[in-house]
Length: 337
Image 1: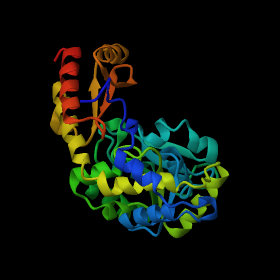
Image 2 (image 1 turned 180 degrees about the vertical axis):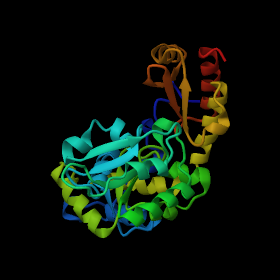
Image 3 (image 1 turned 90 degrees about the horizontal axis):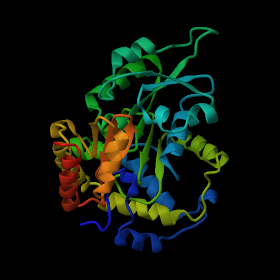
């Protein structure tokens, strides 16, 4: 059992395992701004191959990866369409508008899903000097603020087919794409097929300490490398961190199923139908989120508020089955279940 509080605030809170630390310590490195870090090259080639793409670029954060990915598809004065609770418009401090000059419009779906009819209605081709043209649609899989919801591959393929017919690009925020892959058995390459550019994260479910990647065509990644440098994201002997990502890919993907099982256990204790919890995120409606957070903290369980009457719990690498069982007991008591 974990010493100290059981921390369910986020799956970004994991610490490198001893084996991951050894891999980091032993990594061969070089100057990545000069393109000379062999471990970074290995990671980028590996991830690009997993998604069936030509190239990938290692970035320090998921927000930067999304910024670069969307900017590869949407120019200043153009728009991206996305679901109303998408991470790119809710949780990246307005970076896309502030840094790249794009705008956005949103559709709303209670489960964060693709609503193709709504997207088709919103889509704006070049209609003259008064209207913002739509350049891309962004989808998030799994959808963070929709409780880790998985987007069905059939819906993504339908979106891809329509987008191709009108010349619209698709960005996939795949921060937790690994969870979707494990939960459904969908090959990673199938997710790659439906997106022009993806952003995938290593520091959430996979447990690496730092890092995400932009994945796409060689041209898109070459442009993203220039933009990364312009944003101050050029890194030097970063193979130490890339090695953690490689270790995570080798050892931490299939074990995500354990996180999903633990999330279902906790969901049931919180009065949430476990069948509605697809991956490792549980969202619970409560009378007062701040009061619930403090009550759980007082009993050794850390959770986060994502609204005035909504809390979010995430299972991860550092939450054992015993931790999940203890958290379930505490939360059931706090919530009066």
